[in-house]
Amino acid sequence: MENGRDHHHHHHHGEGEERKSHHPDKVKANLISRLNRIEGQVRGVKGLIEKDTYCDDVLNQISSIQSALNGVGKLLLEHHMKSCIIERIQEGDAEVIDELLVTVNKLMK
Image 1 (cartoon, rainbow, N blue to C red):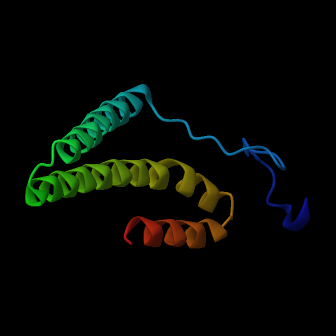
Image 2 (spheres, one colour; image 1 turned 30 degrees about the vertical axis):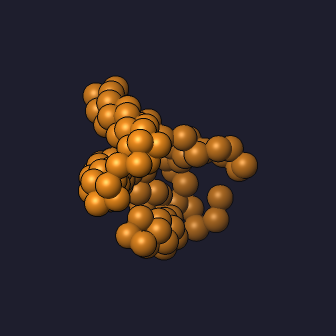
């Protein structure tokens, strides 16, 4: 291996292997319950639109869905940074920072 820093390659992703994340079950359950709630809210909004509800009410619903989604995004991001990112930086893979920045920019559109 080049530059001899490969004494402990615990890369759990070989070439062309898909990256997977390992969410602790607690985190996973939390994310799924949040997403279920969001799903319910989205369905609710469809219902409101079908019933010709006053736009302002619909918009308020949408903004609360958006902040709920941001909450999920922040949780995922935090988990991602504490596990995957730290690991890759320790492996000497600094490109992960650029990847992260691109992702953060997408999140904050």
